[in-house]
Image (cartoon, rainbow, N blue to C red; front, side, top):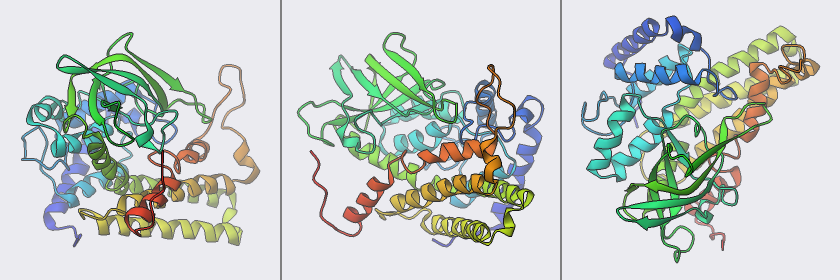
Length: 397
């Protein structure tokens, strides 16, 4: 597509910048720069209030493809969505706790949900009042999503869901979870799956257990469902695979453009560390840093090139491969430029705080997962091989 910013886009940029400057004050000023990779747990309650502030300002749901104001959101095309994301990142506004509902579930409901579901859930997301998490991966079905074992059985007008999900971000804060479960026990693999909406506030039926990571924090969770009630199925019973694949295309594709703006900030921090440590005198490290900068530019141009494009089965997987590997290499560089000092924390060890890390150390540890979550690199290469290159499919039982 022809991607250029027009006069209207620049006016929108000025409006977004002014709004952020006037609202990231007071208690919200303390959130600036918080909630990034490895620190998503920071200021959770205040960031939830910030979601409601964004909703009141009309800044949630800019990319929803529905009539302006129909569900409480502004109308904004791709260029203005990029403008907002750029200004949000430049203001170092807090990491979003409502992004799963806004960027993943809402477009899925618009594409596959019925009108009653859209009217029930979209306004609450647009106001920043309801948070969502994603119930896909399982202990024995991570990247192989079709092998999941969570089941849902009919119970009157709804379903009873039983099973376990894992690596569920924001499960402890979420009000709802969209869950992929098997509703037809006779169906094999991707057949017989349904996309269900499950309220998280069901004591005794929904249990959340945080997973402590090597960064010392617990952004991911295990979620156990024991007969949890689900009153909504999106796209109809048995259509779960089609709906979930439509959602993953958004997760792995369009949203990477927003990620790259944050990546640029992190790269600047690594470059700053390299200058302070004198690492730029090392020609190998200097070459690696320049390569990292160049690859980020290429990723941005590729994302802009494919923004709004339809029918490219390999684009989401290519995007995931590019950013996952790039971000992991950045974390490694963050440690390499500091040499032996990278092994030291920012504060002395104490029994009360035995695991203090600085931002770059958290970046390194957290990015070890980038090539795994959201579909591992191996799965992305299989998708490209089968759906783009037309190579024989891998037989799975």
